[in-house]
Length: 156
Image (tube, rainbow, N blue to C red; front, top):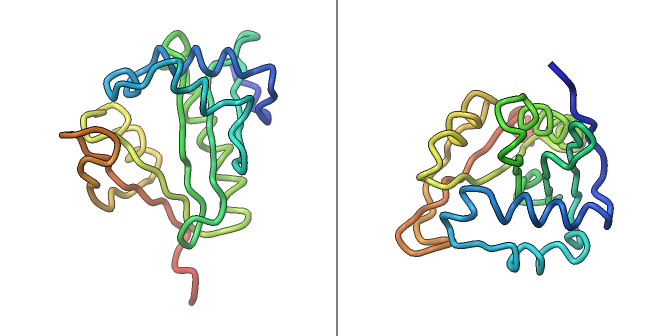
């Protein structure tokens, strides 16, 4: 299996990231368009750590992390291009993020859409626990499931 190159997102990655997210579920099901992502990535999210996975010379994945969320960090976004799925890119990108996060804190939080069965299985396989649903967070009638992966309590 080929290994993606994971690196900090650069402004020149913006167009590929916007295109990747604009054509991907769960975002399309939630009503997000490339125009929405164009506003988020201007050219990269401010106050966030943003990483891309390059595969075969193309941007194949994106991860955005907000530091200092609750008693840990928050994975705001993890996406893999449709053409690059089922090749381990999402797992490798998430492991990269976890290594960075768990070097500074004991918790990594994320959310996944309740209808996104494949993503829920993915996060479970990667060791995340479903904490609970947040109904109507992004769109009416759908819930985001709050997730946590931990190294243990912040105080012992």
